[in-house]
Image (spheres, one colour):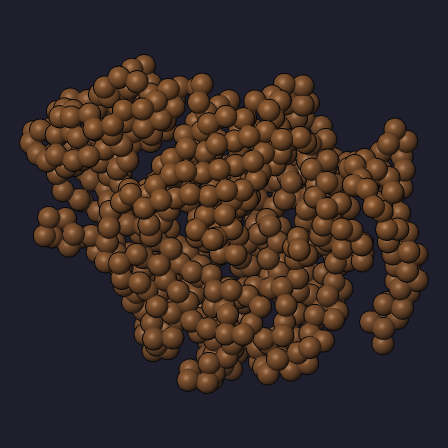
Length: 525
Length: 107
């Protein structure tokens, strides 16, 4: 009864708000400020100087603003076209965005690196990040009053949060208002020197036009490199074309477009081999870095860095290791590369196979007595990359060490979320310290993580590991009548990689939780 | 736990963990970005960092949890935000395929 009454009383208010928010048909593209005044002002009160209540007191990333507008659509029945929404996100991210330094350490959320184990300080972890990522908070800036309104909104919208674990053992609401609000306002303040300085100094987007040499690594597929051509268009937009190849020579080519937000937040959509891939990169002084991933399967993605022609930079050495006493081919990727590279003591260049400003391919020989460990690589005056010289693999690490895969498909609305792994070899240096050699090919398998997983036959039901690639495809969504109590195809698995080190198998282990789907999956987790 | 006795296996496991002082053994998995670690149990992971103590198959009792906003960051809450989420799936066990994702993506 209470519930019915609550909906009834809210209904009247909502009807007024919706009436104001519904847009008349407009034929011409509207500008961001115009959308704010014509659409958002339907609910948000004008405060003078073009300011609107709530909106004008927050700063967010493009994804953050997109989620806010998405929430207005789902919670307040805002009617807005996709085009207007894109325009508004751009306008808000440009005028009320985050400075590059304000996203430091939490870009994994924007880049959809969803297996990142967060390290959120208390009390924020227990008070906020027990339901959603801590990054979602750290990527917003508000004054105290707006943080407090966010607390009220949470309790009003999801009242049972007070009964959940880590709430019912304390006075959550009081703690949120008295402790969290001042803490968040101090840690993530609306006014910041970083943002005001950035607004004054951000470079023009047209400066990103030109050729970019790129390097990447796709788990399950390996390293790649190539050239990205960027043509500037109006409104901080770009045409993008990728022309590259994997280490085995197979092409990595694509065409698409990108938009620059807040003067550095590069968001591209590029079709590669018929797959629409999203680029979430940060531009910084002639370099672009971040991640590029399959839009429909964001777990399938590559680390991506690029250096602009005109700047001189050594981006990567592929592969980044050589075995003592052997010869191998290495590719150096960067921009403005010239001359014969140097790999340090005990590693000599036997032949230069290819030499362009973006790519140098060489054959090297590591002496039998070359020291095990990391050596600095240089080309002319450029450095910053290392080459690992190794004799034997001391340890194999499965990356990511902890991960979550999800059941899906089977006629439902959510796709399967795969597990994708790399086998990372580590060596023991001459100094006795462990050092990372690099990613090696491996044979992959899964095993029950514990006795309970063995009893429940998790290996049989949770999915299939592809032995050669380290790609795990989870089972179907839905109850499974073949399992005890028809339970879901969830599982708790050990992920095991066996790397062949000159005839000796070295294994490493990780843990993968195969779990159920999520239907609420916004851009920032 | 003087006045409470576990009456099923899950409760027994929790009770034993408390007895053996293993309550702090909550693994790092529980803070994988965007996973719900609490709300007894979590959506993705149980209190022991596994999956055997979760409410599964979750389709058996999904609305008992989504209606009172139990995992609102993962499961659409039907009390406040998405009251019509299950309009085409009155029984979650039979109709779960008709449950849609809720973020309004660009078309």
